[in-house]
Image 1 (tube, one colour):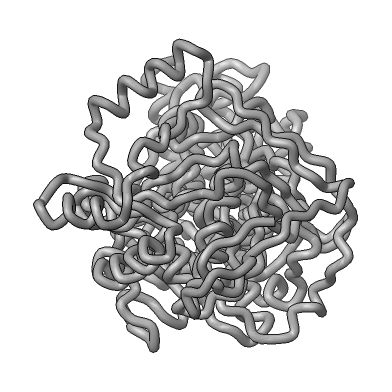
Image 2 (cartoon, rainbow, N blue to C red):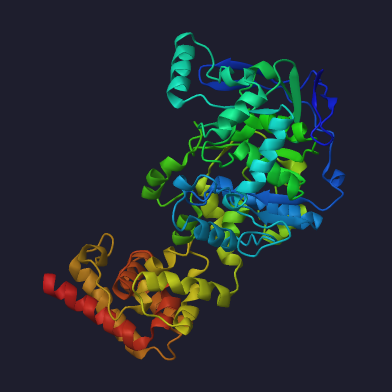
Length: 544
């Protein structure tokens, strides 16, 4: 047990009692420059039904880069929990480190969330009862609470210059000790520290971790986690420029904004005990904590990092939301995909709309095991969601992708070709490549592709010339009326359907792979189809 001042009445009081369930104790071993841990999972006895009140959750990214899959998944789970319980989903920006901010990142972040369908109830752009929602605009709030910690003996001013701290770090490294603050300024009296502050001496504020004992924290996925306090560092909570660091700012904001559940990545597990210490030092109720599993590389070996996205782009993939949109993925498919990386409803259901997820999502079905990013699965989900779209909606979504490829097309023109491509495209970017021939004045088939498989130039010419005769006679120019005489042509010439239709496909579309041939010919119309076949004849005659 240990005693400190209560941050409500500032009297001496017992504030924690360490305990462990035995089967789920976390043993921390300090090695090198990081804390490593082992874990034995105990069964989780809680259920989703235990969450009886509306959940207030926050997604609190730093606008220092692009919204990525990890952040999007966290935001999604926050959103689902809020909607399912009739609570609130809050967007809060952790932008205290102004030097790392990327111009436009905040706007891109919001656009990405809205693209995914994750609308927030409170945030920096729409306000709310706990505004402001940017850390950079709450500096005075954090300083006031930092001073309360100092007065309670739970934080202290530190005047150690960077060069001294570097010497300490090097000495610890030399002696194979974990890097941590050596506590020099811990021993200063408050009067002396305040005098030095008043004289303008450069300083930071550090949180004072108890000297001994343990702290037990609880994660909904991992059970109780018990850590020896001697393995924790006195982290800086306010920098020398007066800006609070995440450790203090996030805990203060979570309390003041009434956050009931904190869902975040497992990279925060090493500082989880520190955050609990800060909350308990103030005497505040802790939120329910959920630390999500990490994403592994597609190979399943090693953690996925933002730095590797450039390599993925070479294969047409990315971990950034803005890239996935540009690559032709639907937001519905991305949501479906990332929901299943760390969560499952049962052992067989995989297709979910956002409405389905709101109904079926539960924290108790989250999986703490790392999830390998499977882009093949994403392609699969994207195809499923594309085929689910109404013809009019798919037309609307395809238009920008045709325009980006330089096609000047109308809604009606794209609407007409949607039925022949909807079942065949995996991404929206596939559409201009597959269906571009519909919107070109002419196509340019390659001679070697035009010649039928196992046939010579003269044999191919014969097929094309007979095709011209058939096309001139077809009325009405519908796919069924077109197909019937070409089936008879196959029998007449004693070639396979693959040979004859393959020649015709390349002549009409300029491609070896296309939407259904005769439906495509109907859409193109008799005049354009006849002209393209005639041009193919001339091409082969010129090279014969």
